[in-house]
Amino acid sequence: MYSICLLSLVSLVLSLALTPPIRKWSIRLGLVDRPDHRRKLHKVATPRTGGIAIMVSYAGAYGLLLLLPLRTAGLIRENFGTVWNLLPAVAIVFCTGLLDDCIDLKPWQKLLGELAAALWAYIAGVRILGITGHATAPWIGFVLTLGWLILCANAFNLIDGVDGLATGVAVTATLTILVAGILQRNLTLGLATAPLAGCLLGFLRYNFNPASIFLGDSGSLVLGFLLGAYGIIWSQKAATMLGLAAPAMALALPLLEVALSIVRRFLRNEPVFLGDRGHIHHRLLDRGLTPKRVALLLYAAGTVGAVLSLLDSVLQNRYAGLVILLFAAVTWAGVHHLRYAEFDVARRFLWAGLRPLLSAHVKLHAMERSLLAATSVEQCWLALDQGARSLGYSRLTARLRGIRFAEGVDRAPAVAHWQMRLNLPERDFVNITQRDAGPDQPVLMMPFIEVLQRILPGKLAELDTPRAEAGAMVSGLAHLAAAVEWRYPATPRNSSTSTVMSSDCGAPSVKAATAS
Figure 1 (cartoon, rainbow, N blue to C red):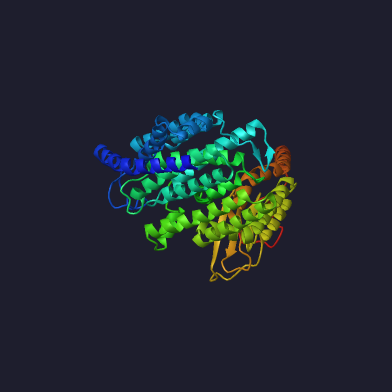
Figure 2: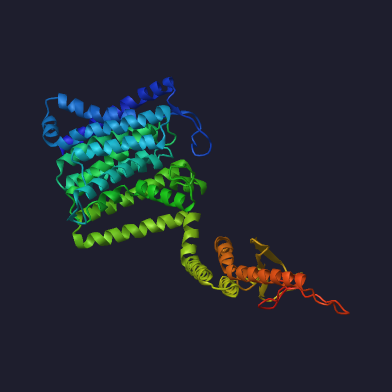
């Protein structure tokens, strides 16, 4: 316990002392974040190299204690194997974030750096070994480990949008993992998180509203990556069967932000990496809260998750499930309070719109099958008529192979309505007329037209083959009759008459015919 307190104190002092000169150095070099009055709400250009101050303070605390002839130095050497092996991975994430702060890396370039760091961490022994107390296949543990570390790194990057928010949430999560390490008598975990908590508390002095220095990607990515790695170390000795559930609750706020951002952008059909003003802190700011109040409110939310994670860690397995259910209920209430339009629309659609839409697709598919199976023009019309009725259309008229069809009750011209016409080869067409105030509103209008456009021309041409053959036979007989008449002319009568046979569009319709 003495060693843990000493590490925290040394890192706190280093952070308080080193942050101001690093801030001045960043301003001199132009490494600042400029406001855009949209997502970046700070008033003046602010240094974004807080990650340097945190990393120097964090590493410096170990360096000083290792140089001093104290018992703490021996404990660090004896219990720090996994953390020493993890340092190259942390360096990769730090360099990736620092490059992004300096030259603005593309999302795939940042992801590549995070992936390399996660691979190194896995080789170093930071691994998810099982789920709900059951060992998993090595490849499953490999994928879960990489996904978890990359998720945590980006989670803290997403919430870093209000002065002091990411740093304060990281302090809460770090202290939670530190307490868990002490309760588990996990000295490695305690020695790893104690100096991180100290340097974060020191840095928060300059990062809280109004902030004079920001974390930057070099800070937020490293914090998320380190806490994700320490969460895995915590889960390897967790008392509950669900293992990683406790670290996930400790990191609940940033992880929830990632999940909400992905789902929101998916529902909006927008790129996942596209920035917007839909984050949790933006929603609270839009409700009139000041940045300071937003940060304090989200600190409280993070504290709730931290308390529940510790309860899940120390209670017996039979109570862990109840803690998780309580956490889920609190999370649902918080998201509901934010009133995201995307989720309200999705909920209404799933509750009231999904079944009718599925039913309409089934009816459209049935019409398509009937059209494909039709063996006559009349059967094509019946398939169209039944399909249109089932989808809620008021009136359907058509001209198929020169024959006119009509169905539905006509109306006075003054009644509001709209029409859509699909022109087919050989002057054929399908015409839809719909009353705006009709009892049944149509659905799947464009898919309905697409099915007709795709199937009808080929089907009508196929059905017209026998008629073409009959026409050719009639034409042959006519030529033969003309030849006979030329050779043996008939005696004309007193009155001349002529007969014309036509398959013109004036042919009788199968149902009530409309005017040509």
